Image (tube, rainbow over all chains, first blue to last red; front, side):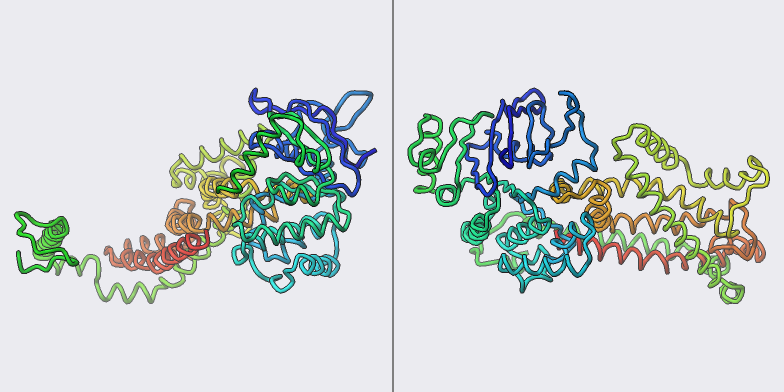
Length: 258
Length: 278
């Protein structure tokens, strides 16, 4: 079974159906990019995977574990909050707005969850945190508070923070959308390296070059459904569906005439 | 008026009226003049000899200090500090209850807050003084501190609960989501991520509550503490009765300012600091 196996996922906000039956499989070590216009449901779907949103229908398995529910004889029972929290430990998430803890230094941000959730010793947690900071190129800023870091640096710390829980899967929710253009590259570089190391990643993004170079599969969503999915050279290079073509050409023209 | 230099490099045009700035300046001078006249009128019409002998009689100022106004000041500080701790703990608990998903917790917290916030503190204190009648044999430990702290803390917690609740809700939603996505259970996320930020946000209004608490401690005489437990107001009243003169109360009043003015300064500092970091 693939690492992520989502079947017919539906979700509504106040009678507004945001997800109209999403199917998605992600194999171990794969990088999947979710593309699509805003409001297409990409972010909502990502948040459903780690249960930041509850789903109305369908099922999501991560590493053979049904997310958020227990299946007893075909009937679904909502898991307790503690059990859902335990499931989330296996899934890292990086947010558009970084969401670093402003009252903690970069190092403390990374150490907090392993200490509180896994009960790791201060020493172990700190050592790994320093290694991770080094990996994202910020070892020298370990004692800086988020307000003292640039957006790109904050996002790299946020990636290190998620990695500190040693997740099986990383979710990225438009990780570069809130950044100044000149800071996008440093974050994408960290993500590229992560992909090379074999991390399974689902990335909501508008960065076409990243999707083209790094993704194994590109999924184009629109209006709460998957319109087109496949290798980047097909979906981006030779889109079959008119909605995909329209979206890509709009993105390209924005790029050329900002 | 043509001698008044006009600002900048604008050409000296012949003006009929005054510029807006000149008009504002003139109205301000009129306001100052009215204020000075009022102050002078009050000063001249006052009977200064009478004022000094009723409110500021030197020998009574001296004997107020000798009789131990400083001990009373310390008592006021002790009563306030203990009540603040109880109010803070109770207020945090009530705020969490009010934000709880469990209905009864919410209802209890809302009822408590509305009740004790709506009631004059003095009524609560009178009720407290009669508690031993309702529960014969009941004693509250650390007399007189226990009773005072509890009575003041009960009222303070109702006020602080609302402030703390607002602070918790002012912490961006993304913070909780980040904590949850790291696998933190709700309790850990609240304790380690949300509450520290919430308290930072509400530090200025909380200092305000502390100032109110300093003044509310003047009501503890309603509970009926012994003379050696008198705080500033109780002490001042007692002495004013003995001397048949208001001077001790005035001295005590100034002692309150000794506490509240630095606190007010602190609150403004904190406010300026949070304004800068946000």
